[in-house]
Length: 80
Image (cartoon, rainbow, N blue to C red):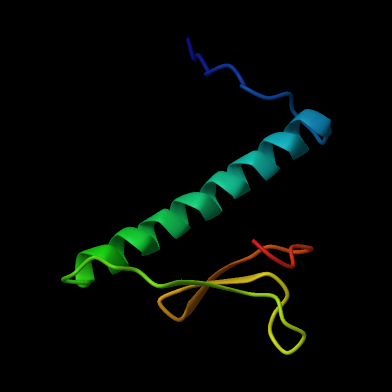
């Protein structure tokens, strides 16, 4: 007798699956950002990170940098 685990989401396309996928993708991006931050913190002896936000016309709109490395973009945001 073969048993299978019940599906957590309904099969096939639908709004619940799309919303779940978006949530998981956002969580993945957040965890990747946290991992990069932790890695940077471990490499820095004094522990002071430099966080920069740029929204000028000559920069990427809503660009967020951590220690000079682009880590995120916040579309539509012009100031923090």
